[in-house]
Image (cartoon, rainbow, N blue to C red; front, side, top):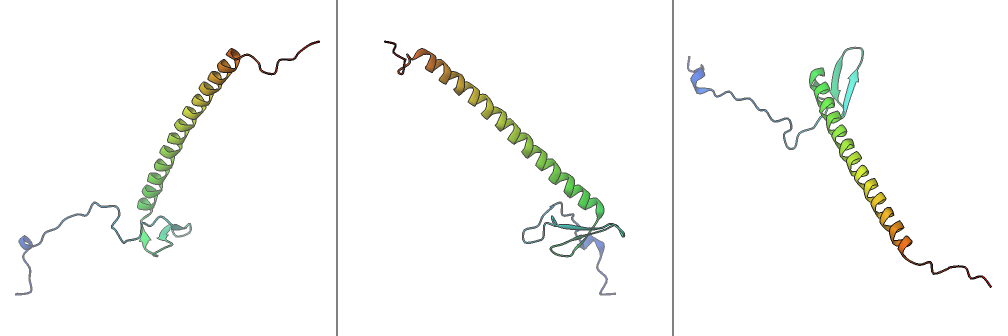
Length: 104
C-alpha cells in the first residue's frame, strides 16, 4: 500500500482565470448545427456550448459599450461643431464686410 497517497497531502485549487498566457482564446469558433458541437477553429479544442454562448455574450457587451462610447464622442463632437459654428457666425456678423458693393 505504499502507492496510496493520503488525501490530506493533496491540495485542490480551482483556476478562475479565463485566459492563460500562451493559450488559445477560442474566439474563432465553429458550430455544428446537427450535433450541437462547438469547436475552436484555431486549435480544434472542443468547447461547451454554454462557454461559447457566454464568450459571445461577453464580446457583444464589449461591442455595445464601445458603440455607446463612440456615440457619446460623436454627440460631443457635434455639439462642439455647433458651438464653433455659432462663434464663427457671431464673429462674422461683428466684422464689417470687406467686399461691400460700391454703387456709382
